[in-house]
Image (cartoon, rainbow, N blue to C red; front, top):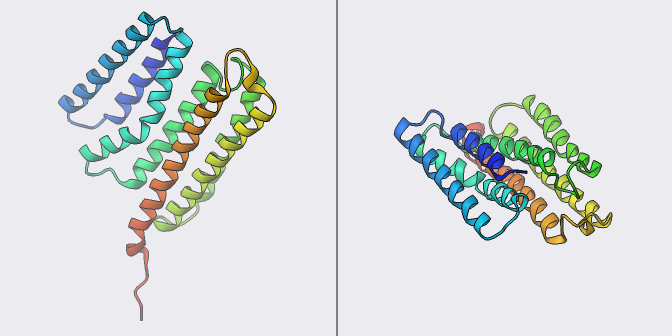
Length: 213
């Protein structure tokens, strides 16, 4: 996997979360990230790091920064709410997870059938989102989505445990630290999105509460 491919994915994400902002602000952020990625790739290659490791490193940095990116956007766009930030982080994390699985694989080598287990994470998210849409707007829907994201985090963690039990960490291209670290990163992101949904629910609660007699 070429690091430049991952860098292009990061560039698309930056353009997505800067959309609608004043042009100078968006351009400054895009140029800043592009320059940082270029320097990062050049430095790692000068150290003899393999392209796969560089690509995974960039992917890891992107995933860890999703919440910070949503927060950055929220500080510059007053219309952004905790609920919208939660949706943004959840969708970006799910998309990134399955892009990474398809590009390099998280379990064993690329194309390992064990990676199909991650389809369970997406299935939980889709079914949960459908159920949540039938709930009233506001507190109920936000709490419902929080539970969905917690469930996704639990499924992600369960897959990592299954992979370790199956001995997938013994493959030459991976290790216990890499397998656990990457999955833990996604668990943290899904859990972070769940926290944002709960935060949104608490903000809605006063408006949703019925007045006492």
